[in-house]
Length: 438
Image 1 (cartoon, rainbow, N blue to C red):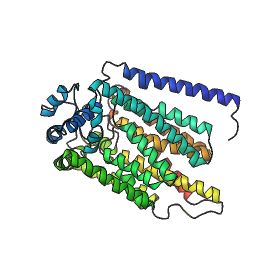
Image 2: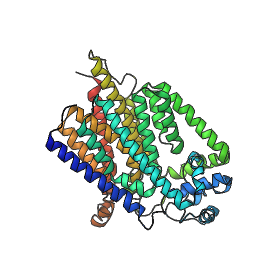
Image 3: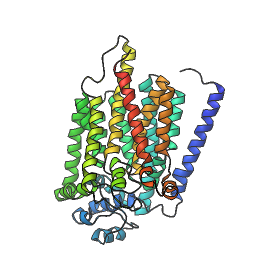
Image 4: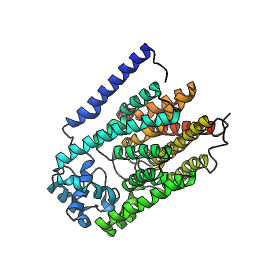
């Protein structure tokens, strides 16, 4: 590692001090002191986990999927159950049973104290995820690049999905930590640990199953086998606790409703774009789409095309021909592995029927991979396009678009999706360049 010129060190120090201070205020302090701090998505987790701990999962784990609405409280028995346990303005639990079982011990605390502990845990997981991403940079470049590491810290803490995820109190930081940890474990060839990370992530939210399938496709079958076996074990154990009927209700009742997507501004998936463009449903209401036939067909068509392209880029033999430079060969193959992993991670966000803006906190993994790859090659064009993609994903312009672009608001509202698609294309282009070394 070369020495940093004094002026560069000064600029980096100012940027990082400002970044940490700004996140400390916007992401932490403002959330902790907000009047509605205790009214976030954690209330659904706490309600479901309380039902598990008290042995009442059969009655109160899930709501009626036919009457589920993300914006309005239905008149169902679980609402009274939640409020009787101190949960303000409860919302329906829509995750697989595993998360409720895992969080059951947390409900030994009163709701407000548990919520504060959950917020603190999310803060620690974000910090740990950043450390993992910085460690990934050393693996990808074979050295510590101070400028690239500073850029990753800047990106992570100035990211609107990061701040929004802190406010929402969802499980996004758990998934970020597990996704980043899974990639580090793969790079270091610790297949059981990689499988454990992805199995836990998939048990919490099903979309990481794509990464397990991709590992088998890309030739890391041992890690995929660990992931599949552990996922099956976690699922079976959780169903043994909450009852198999709840698992059946989730698969047959909730997944079909969730797969319809939503037209709301917060849904930044391909499905959200199609619902906004092909239906007249409101962008301001958090309700599930009626999903006309055109949206159903095009959602699955575009998802198939995007995933098919990602898997085609990483088909067997995707690492290209070996080179005589053994050290350079190891680095190139590590970069290709990380790029493929990042591409599938990003694809899972783009093709999921519902990807709220704060779900894009997972995009920090592909963003960090691209930062290190661009730092390695130093291509000005790639750096410019990466900057555009980052800005599109990282800013909060939803209110501005709705108020200032009344005529063009529906296509413009998907600007975060456009940034994600641009980032997807950049990763794919980087992979193609590295597959056949000069």
